[in-house]
Image (tube, rainbow, N blue to C red; front, side, top):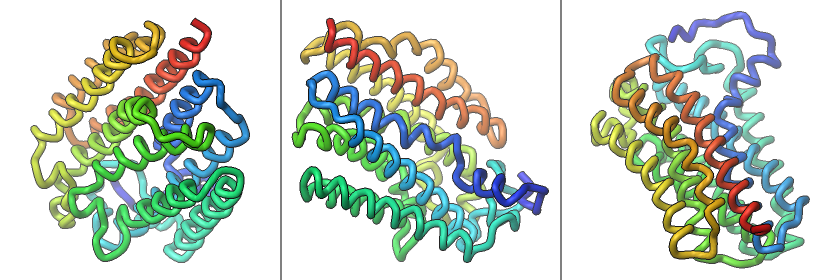
Length: 302
């Protein structure tokens, strides 16, 4: 996609910079972690609201950092197949992006301090590590996304840490169940990144951005996506068969036709065609998360 400057207002430019389609990744772990707390009768709405604000701020801050350092490292150029990047297209300056990154992570830190005050020090550790990881994704001397660790980072921090952290806010507990319910969340959010990296595989190679897709190739990336899709459903079966969950937890199985369709798209589409797969994968993770959360909550009243 051509990154030359186009006519956007400053407000529209900031919306582009925030990448609203990726914000599903901030919503789903809070939903699922909160629903497990509701099932156990330990839910506090205000805690989840603050956790959601922090999650969105971290996602936006990470997106802005990614925009900045991809530009500085030459990963964004006129051959880019993805959506417009605001720095490369001249819509927002480097200085403005740096200020916005500082604001996002500073607000996250301040809100996090209140959550630490009403809970305990472990929330401080979770918050600080999440902020550091958001910056380290593309910034610093060893950027995770440039060294094959992007997939693992997303799985851990937007899946495991965010979901278990939300559950911990309400219960002050770290449990096997909270870990298990976080796996589908992390898997499907990671799939969003996988599509992005598959689409950009050639450009990333040229920019020496060693994503897992670049290191291990197209076929591995397609099978990684398929495996994480399968893993999400497998965990649901595990919860139903071996843990205290009713058949309601299987609600996301209604999405299997969509999962199959998306997987087929990943194996047949290439280049800019994958933009629609990327968008649909993000929406799919939200749909799965909503049904998963609804199933967990319904289980409380079963």
